[in-house]
Length: 124
Image 1 (cartoon, rainbow, N blue to C red):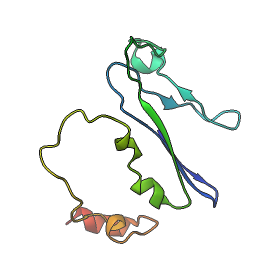
Image 2: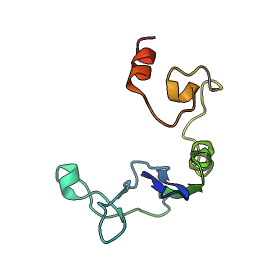
Image 3: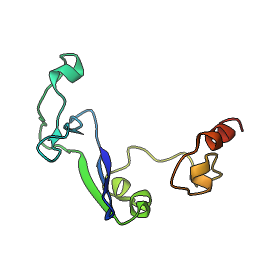
């Protein structure tokens, strides 16, 4: 839903996981009155189709909204909470592991993206 830098204090990730066709997803509102709020889709955002409010028959399952906080992005990148709280929809066909990276920011762990470096990696 959103990743925010909180001055020099750290980072906050707001996320939503476990969304299905049985319950609508949410998003953050535009910044107003010093903050954000959770909103559901409006009629204008869905071409006039669907519900503008949350409704679910019982028994039902709603999406999880999670907050991850860290002094650095390490806590955000390494969190597994979005996967830990939901039931898998299917079993993976194989075991996946991180392999080679083809972007400078994955390889070098630098804080910025440089156009020239990115072109070099795109042209690999």
